[in-house]
Image (cartoon, rainbow, N blue to C red; front, side, top):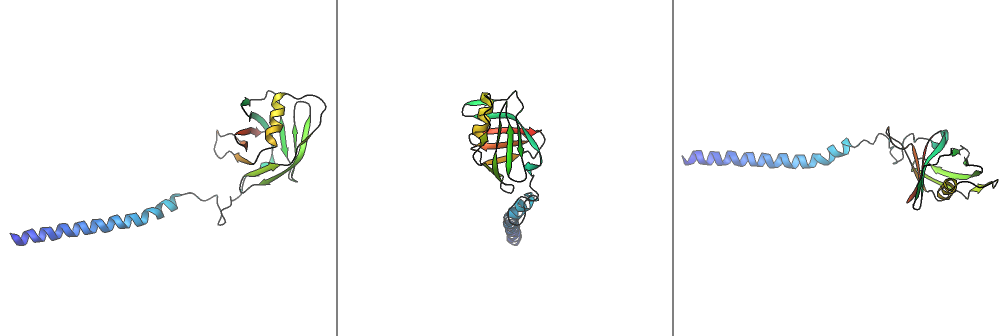
Length: 165
């Protein structure tokens, strides 16, 4: 009977060793599985976005502005044109503002140089909020999924939301 006991103990010991080996193997494979599961299909070898969406290929209509404590959904149509040559124009209630911008499509960075506006007459407070926030924008996000806001310029905590015009 003692021979049977030792063979059972050896058998259980072997099972325990195999279980330990399988657990170690799983722990080694887990990071590899996680790495493979991440979808990096939009990122190239240098860490840049492949085929970034070019925001200069459309005119953008303002749908919401947050400037300080004020959040407004302008009733008027304010349209921002980002030209491929690095210039922009935004049409307000009465006036038009122009200037230069710099965009880095890979890092979703955008900045606007000092903005110059005509002074034909008075614009609404929404229009003034737009120009104030536009002058401090540093980055943008663009929709990747249906239902997302198509384009957001961030001057945190302030922002401007746009849709394609």
